[in-house]
Length: 120
Image (cartoon, rainbow, N blue to C red; front, side, top):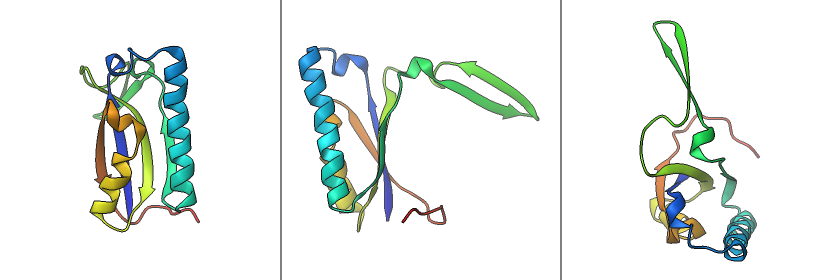
């Protein structure tokens, strides 16, 4: 089964890191990606640009509305994701707990509905 691990956090959660520590933190994510890939568990992972770079698109009554910035006013924002393959919910939670961001941020884990396109 596929699970989407959504990383939510704030800038303040990592603001205490020096540039060197931030590079090490990023490298931890790259290393974790490689570990998951080697185990056949990683489908995809990406960090996202800051929330303020977001654009929201809505269609209401056949009219397009485009708004700059994130959808909701909140202190936490979606910072990245991991799409993983796991045998069950328990394994998905274990994989999510291994994401380095879990130390500072929140990881929301959701089962992906079936029927989507699959990559080999």
